[in-house]
Image (cartoon, rainbow, N blue to C red; front, side):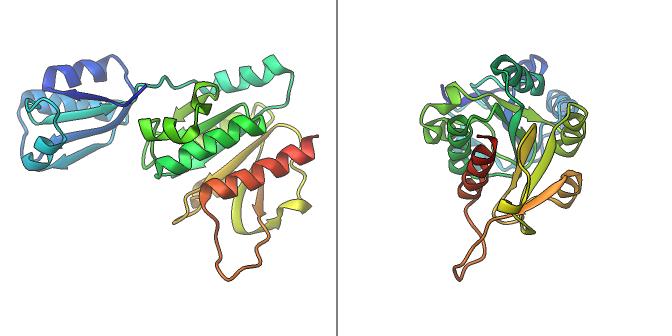
Length: 243
């Protein structure tokens, strides 16, 4: 399945009101009439980030040439709920193992992490709605089919989601260079692995919600790993300890 392009004011407004998952919403700069204001207001209610661009850019994005100043990209993939991920663990009779991503913007990284999640036995992936890539066609292609078998939930507030999952008995470990070497941590039992972006890592607020901070031993001259590689290394340390 691919990303859907929705153009025109009525079509975009209907998609918002139907609760579709928006990857992006682009509005032409300078348009402030009633229908456009309604679209922007509805987007705000649903935590959809609005981007503004000039008409030339919308013309380039448009597939019909009749965008009326509004274009939306909507995920063609259905997101799961966080409860669905926990239910998947219960169905297998296993302690929950979730991977939470804080600010991953590269669709290739997200696709690779979803593939790792599937192969490592994680019960699902959680991503934030804002400032992060969603389930695009590139993500699906990079996952090499894993997206069809791995549940992905999208949440408004990652830090609050961690708090909610703690009440379900999960412990959380985040990846960071300044943490304890991963081999020295107890990563068994119900666990959430939190991985941040290459540029900024895990945000301060999310890191503060985590119970442990794990670092990956590195001996080279550079000081960081690609986010999907780091996720894979830590996921398989969790697999090793859970065996």
